[in-house]
Image (cartoon, rainbow, N blue to C red; front, side, top):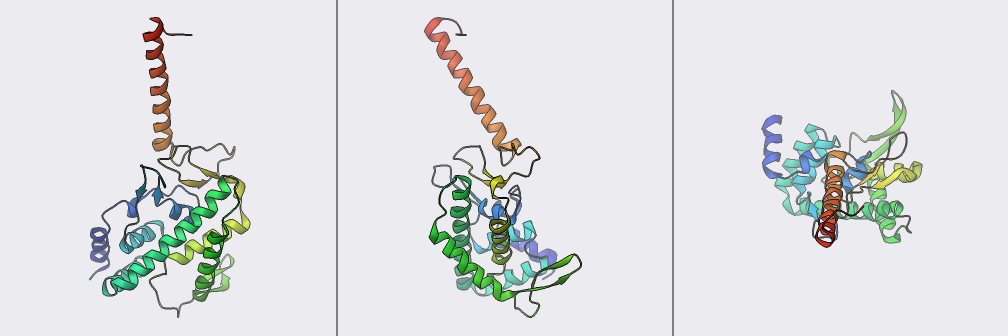
Length: 231
């Protein structure tokens, strides 16, 4: 199967939005958290429903090369049960990160079980990395001899989360002001630090429309009560 045919096959196996979600978090770990929205509400939307969705998203954000994506695709199709377990671990990582970063955003105590879960993923990710010289200094590199495993998409996410937690700027973490239907977390990298929305064109526009409808409803209510718009 050619690379093009393989990626087309992945699109058929992952027909949802996972492979085209906007990357607005500012860090890979935050974009991973944002593959789900509206948690705990009637507006909950899940974009990772299978291991193939995880592969589509990982290729979309650049975590996996096309070659790694196709290798993992073939492995997942040949070994569906281990792939499903890897997918369950991915969701566990995502929800641990959500618990940690949402607590930071809300200025709450970070849940100890979520930190313990992240530490467990850190220990596993270290088995496939090494610290070595690079053109721009030093950095973490994947060990060439390390075989590509089904958990491979998780390790760059873990690394990004640990680096953000260790180095910040945690004070710039925010949750979208779009209400419970969204809840996406992002790193505000604007100069004045006044970003409010995951995407102005989406949640910002919806919020403006809600405010407009609210004002219109109040005006109509005033007209019904008094026959005129109250000042």
